[in-house]
Length: 167
Image (cartoon, rainbow, N blue to C red):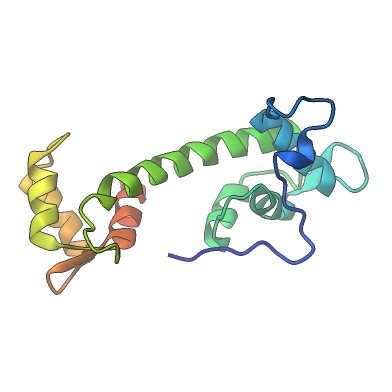
């Protein structure tokens, strides 16, 4: 797991910095935060940012894409990205993050000592008996990719599950 740190001199958008003309009980919508962050990087105020800035804006908004993820995200974007395209990127990326977060929470139950590691046999039992049951072949493939001498690192396991299937 590679945690990205916000670049130096990069603004970090918080709820409090966006609450102008709002009561303290109201929260700015997510898209308002995105628009404000986007605007901070739109230095020439033409309504666009360079595609190489997309990852930086995402990080300023508290997301943590790796460099490889950013390259994948921006590969099909035009050189200059308007807010509508940026918003589409954020919506797509948010879904990925939410699913990953849910997985971490679900598997935390099996990580009794909080070290991010579970026993392979325990994970096999869970995957073949709970929720959407996987076949033995599916479980074998996952375990083969993640097993480390009878244990599974949950972060590696989650990343393996999230990888797009090869066609």
